[in-house]
Each structure stands twice: as structure tokens, then as C-alpha cells.
Length: 294
Image (tube, rainbow, N blue to C red; front, side):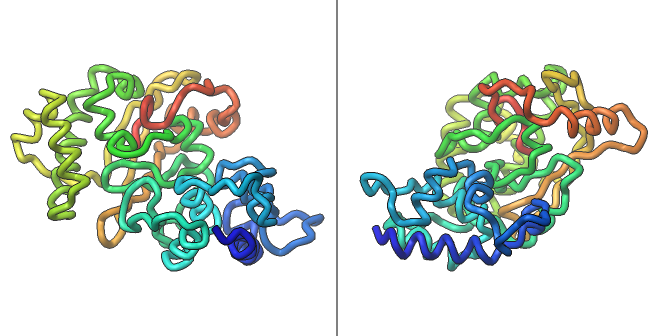
């Protein structure tokens, strides 16, 4: 692993990002035009000490950063596809597919819109409902992003295989969400064509969930673009919101955000959520085991 080159590359990418681009205040006492090391670490979910070691090319015992860490840094530093691949090459890690998956490169147009949605819960997910990036209000409403890899990174997969994933919705709403998830997955499977990842997921779901198998056999298909949701929040109770989806041009990623009509109880609860934030949420909750991705 070329630690000096890796560190230099991270430093130059950090220097070019302005705080406002990632929703941070510029502040009168800021001495550098770009981001501080601790800010990059926070955006990537890393410790400040570890990120500093990476930049300085002095990681203890030469420990390789994981693919998950590299993907998080690529998102935090707003790397384009070529830059992301270069980062993986410098770390001597296999370059993951860029089209989809938990380590996918977030499409710049969706990321730019997400950065501007500071007053409403919002996130970017794949067409398999894997969370790529989200804002603070999304974490406060939906919980923290899960650490799972493989099929379990998909909320649709967990919806049909892990009963805990359904606790985010009132029980009477479960049949509706099951139909919506199955129909949306039908569309994703057709769009991807002969995609081994989707084929494996569908095969496992058909074997492990009678409900999914029955819904899949209907061949109902519908790309989700808007839905009305009742979300069970541990502090706010049931929150009624509208969820909107904006799809990327190839349909493999989507920006989704939650809102409520002005003056409604849902709007009041969102205002309260912005005050409460994530500080009261239990550390054990994760986004798509207990909360919906889309």
C-alpha cells in the first residue's frame, strides 16, 4: 500500500471542498479554505486520529483501510468515479462496482440535492434500497445506517427475512409496504437484466419468505416515486409523512425525502425532530433494521 501517495491524495481532495458544500459553516476563525481533518473524519464516520494517520501516511502497523472505510471517504470527499477508483488502487483494494451496492459512488446530481435538503429528512439509496448517504435529520427519524454487507444491506431483503425491520411501521400497514417493496424490486430486476446480485436475492427471498414468493408470482411491477408513510418513532410516536423519490437517469439510485403539509401534526413533529436530533436515540438502533429505506 502506497501510504504517502494515499495521504497526499486525501489531503488534496480535502483542501478543494468548501465547508458550505457539505453543509458546514465557514466561520470567521477558519484558517484553511477546505475542510479540516476532523470534519472529514466526522463525515466519513471515522475517528479523527485514524483519519489524521491516513493523511500523514503513518497508519500504525501499516493496517490497510477497509473497502467500507474507503467508500465512506469517497463519499465524504465527493470523489468522482475516477477519483474513487484511484483511492482504492492506492490502498491496494479491489475496486468495487460503481453502479450499485453499499460502496457505490453517489451520483453527483443526487448528492448536490441532498446537501441542500438540510431542513427535511433525506437520503440517497440504491434501487435495492441500500443506504449510500443520508443527512442528520434522516438519521434522527430513521436511525443510523446499518453496517451489514451483502444481501442484508438491502432493506427490502431484511423486510422479508427479519421481523424486527417491520417495527418502524404500524402492523396494519405491513401488507401495503410488502406489496410496494416486491413491485419495486420487480422493476429493479428487469432494469438490471441478467444481474447476479438481484438473481441471488430474489432466489433467497422466494425460498425463505412465503409472503414474498406469493407477491413475486403476481408479477406486479411499480417503481415507487411517492408514498404516504406512518413511521413509528421512539420519542415522537407515529409520524405521518409523505415520502418522495427522485430517480437518477439510469434508475439505479434515488434521492428520497420526507415532508408534511405546513401546519399538520407531521410538520410539527419534524420541527421537534430538528431540535431533538439524534441525541436521544438508542445506540443500538440501525436505520434499516428498524426503519425504512424507501
